[in-house]
Image 1 (cartoon, rainbow, N blue to C red):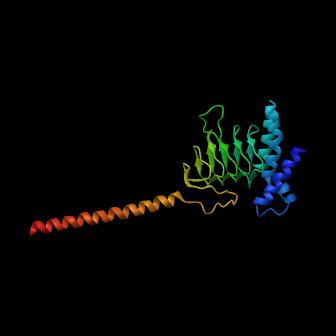
Image 2: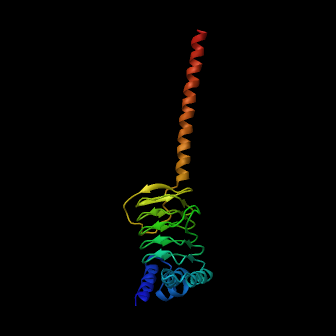
Image 3: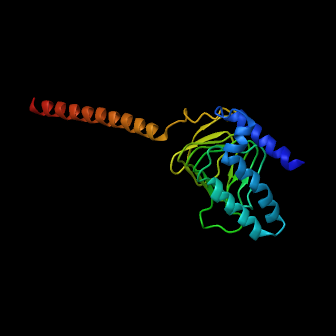
Length: 223
C-alpha cells in the first residue's frame, strides 16, 4: 500500500540524515516529525476532497501532540525530514519539493498581504535551518540553504546560500546540500564589519594625507 511505503521511506530518510537515529523503531516511536507527516497524509486527502473541517481537526490534533503545525492544504514531496520539529509552521498554500529538510522553529508562511497563493514554493533538496522564516508566495529554488534565524521575503535562485534579516544571497553554487552542514555558512555581518574596517582605514589614510599636504602648504607660506 502506497501509504505504508511512503512512511517506510520517510523513516529511511531519517536514518540516513540523522546520525542520532539508531533504528527504524526508535524513529517511529520518538521522532515527532514522522508523526506529523503520517497524519498530514489523511488530512491532506480529506482537504482535497472538500472535507476541510475533519482535515483541520486532524492537523490541530497533530499540532497538539507533536508541536508541528502543517495545514492540511500544504503539498509535501517525498522524503521530507522535519528534524526536532517543535514550532514548525507550514501554511495552507505551501508547496514543498522532494528531499527537503526543515529544522525546529521554521515557518513557511505568508505576509498577510496576499490572497490565493500566499505561501512559498520550496524546491528539491532545500535545507531550512532552525528559526528561519520564509514568508510570501515566491519560489525557493533547488539546492538552496537558508541559514538559522534568516527571514526570506523574496525569490531565491537555485544553488544559493541565504542568511540574514532580510535574507541575502551570500553564496551560489551548483553542489547538492545533502551534507546538512549548517556550520560553515558565510556571515554577512562579519563581512560588513570587515568592509567598514577597511573603509575606516582608507579614510584615516586619506585624512593623514590631507593633513600632511596642509602642513606642507603652511611651511611653504612661511618660507
